[in-house]
Image 1 (spheres, helix red, strand yellow):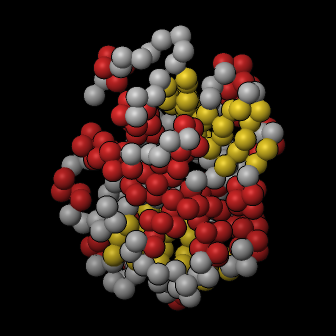
Image 2: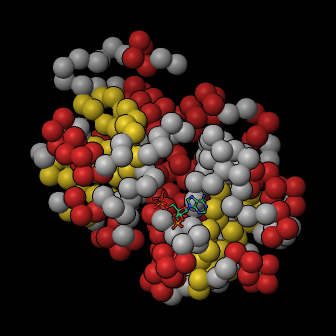
Length: 288
Ligand code: ATR
């Protein structure tokens, strides 16, 4: 769908929203937000911006009067010093994925945490479950704090040990090596890294041998919906959770922060499916 051509409302009063990150080519944020603006008759446009310098990105928000942005890889933590205020949850997590520009003052929020927990709870309980999080970046932090709040037992695996250690200490979890996953035998494994994301779709954060049938395996990557990691997990008989529902949940919460209007969640889900994903993928995923 070409929203620019379909829009009745692009004019000098159009509010601009966007995504700041690097890379951003995989993102489907423009799809859900623009469709929701259109549906709710809001004179606004959402665009992805690939940036290399977060300080300059923040200056651009102020200079251009951009009303709100999503923040993605790798800026969710490094953006914090440039904001005027951070809400309690985002501050506790130490990662921001949403910024609202209120008359030149920038406010940071985190919608990843609740988005991921809602998605996981649809499939599994969390209390007392042994949950292994792969990664220790902004998304991992949001998910780890959400799991801790629900009294799950957290294991952290991360490429850079020091970063993993910091997160594990903060959430009173355990930092383990990737090789320990076999002996620890977690109930749930969540990939929070970008490994396997378009265009690197043949990569996986964990080899098939580490997975067993009783596990719930979740990937926050949503493009492709059916990552190599999830394909391997499905072959092993694991219950799999793709990144779509977390993506839509966090995007819907962002939309509500952007506009103050309830997000058309079902429509957001549908647009992602009908535009990008093939129906056969749905058969193997239970969380949609
Ligand atoms: P986000 O804010 O989206 O979580 P991030 O803060 O850049 O993004 O964090 C990305 C996470 O994915 C990090 O844990 C990163 O590991 P490092 O701490 O070692 O940087 C992990 N990650 C990204 N690419 C990776 C790769 N190719 N192999 C292993 N880990 C990777």
